[in-house]
Image (cartoon, rainbow, N blue to C red):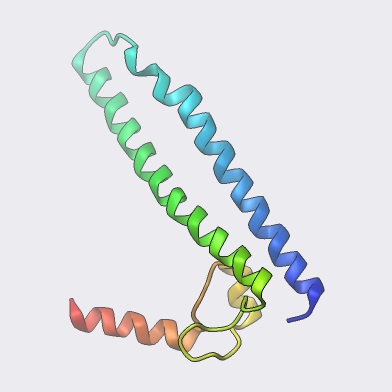
Length: 120
């Protein structure tokens, strides 16, 4: 992959990382600080706790995505970005546009998913 395309993917990854960090900061600064809030009844309290738990699960998924983004940025630095970790072939650029943290080409990803189905 040429340097221009690598710079594009790097910028995209950094932008996604920044958005996730901003959302996480907003969650900590606003949503989670409301825990001392008094609620008029148990239904309101239950609704708030349900929403809070959903938000925390979402942020946990984003935390995992942050790790994948950092790994993708490292692959850009060391020259392995866009190369399938399973077969060593190039990952299709269209796949990387949709999922820039991808580490497997379509074929290897399909094989992985097929094997997971068999093991379930």
